[in-house]
Length: 312
Figure 1 (spheres, rainbow, N blue to C red):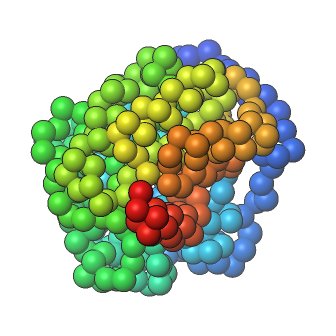
Figure 2 (tube, rainbow, N blue to C red):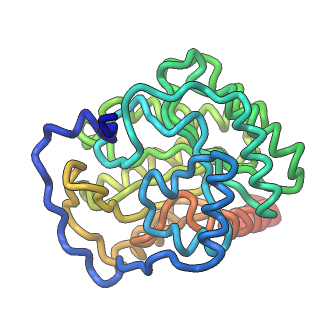
């Protein structure tokens, strides 16, 4: 049988040679017993993780702590974002038993915080929102004390999808803008910047007390002022938590790395984001949406409690 091409839409594109990573980007290969134990559990329960599918550089560190970000709705995405390593093409058949297996993994790992994300499923009438709801409900049954963070697609043109997920009451609703609006055509060609912003704003309309979160990659060719404008847009949508990390090119067929942003620049972004009113900011070369998500959630709750106590 012929091997499946992981990114058929990129196969004929010219290569973008990846530049050598600077010293601050280097990570150690995953070798810990906990990493292998987490991997065995994911395979046993037939679960996909974005840690593996997106080739996350932090997988060794996170899995050593038994923190994995589960990716539901299959392993094949209906979009073709030029930055992403998740396989694209005809999506998998929806597995009705997947939500319970996710909940079992959460319980067996003893997680205090779980991040549940997914591929885009433009082929489904609800974009997969019902599957998110079923997964949240299953986790609440198996591990009622676990905090649940969802990282959803944009549910573009899927009426009622966002409302359904919010009604299931996750603790954090995350949707990543990924990049500045000027670059959407080449980085997120199937998405719309203002539709993603509207999704985040809609979550706050429906549940003002629900924490919202969004993330950006830098090093794709954006300008500093464009990043600052995105921050302003996110604050206008009342987003609480911002993550900013360095874009790393998965293969030569993916979007080129325009440059490596320095740790000092990330520190500046972090300071300016706090100045704009975000409750929580994580900005560093290796920051990813789920990186230290549990610890950050605890800090996020503490920041809101301080804000309330101060009468803000």
